[in-house]
Length: 439
Image 1 (cartoon, one colour):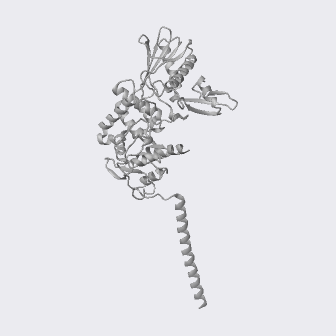
Image 2: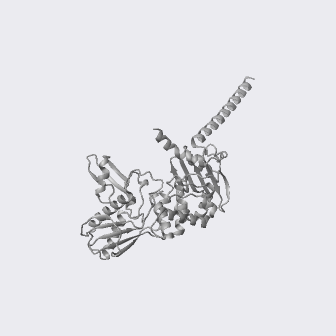
């Protein structure tokens, strides 16, 4: 129990150590921000109000905004991920991936249609080639839970590395979505006895991520190969593409980087943002992809756009913000938003304004643009989630918004007081009339 309590407390103790120099924010924000910062900048980028501007805080998913800013510049909005398909003399199919995050079941069907048009008539062995990734570790910050947001990333990743499963109370197991056929690994996942429909991280606990991702991809390609009417049978394995294999087809993703950016900003996909982050490093410094290359590419691009001092205030350990070692200051985030303004339409709306949220245990953040165009950031590294109230204050010019119930009560009190005054005047008038009659 003590170990668990210390593990839960560690993130906030870490935040507190970083924020030792933070000062109390002024009213009316003081009651909302116990450990955090807020700031607002005008259209020219000048800060008009805020507190704790240079204190670093855990950003959570608002870090996806600087990831997007760097990637759109390094890769370009029209960039499309590639996947290469090779064949050998024994009708083996080699799938060499470069981290396309959109290898969904629907996309794989399009791939088989293209392969058939290029003469593919039979598929025996299916090999997954992971040589274009050389990750030092899996996604920073992942807890390797069943949840899809903890899914690993790899060069050949299908259906976001989450498996759709439908299990009945009687023990029958089906695919959890119409677009994906039943796969053997679904039966393995359903052995936990849980009934219902769910999506499950393909790699849970201490599994071998590369092996499990490859197995999922190979099983899906095998099932959809049969659906496409292609004969053949054989093994499914991890194997590097040999020099003697023939390149049959290079597939380019149906989604451009701009579309992917919109997806991972609006739906806060850790999976997509991390693969975009890795591609940025690999395209700039050469494949295979590594976290070190991605970190270097992001840092160099942010330095170019924002300056070295601002970039130094943004600590990138991943592309998604899932890692608790990430840091950002309010001042640096405002500079990011200034540069990101042409892409603001890619954000979804929170509290009625275009913004990105960031949420983790003890972390509640917003970064975006107010109705008047001013950029704003709210960084709360505390247990109490007061970012909604803080945003309402910013939208209302720092004036506390009177709640409807309070307004109604105040109006009722005013009406009652006015009615009482009128009643007293009427009573006084009647009394005066009575005295006049008696006289």
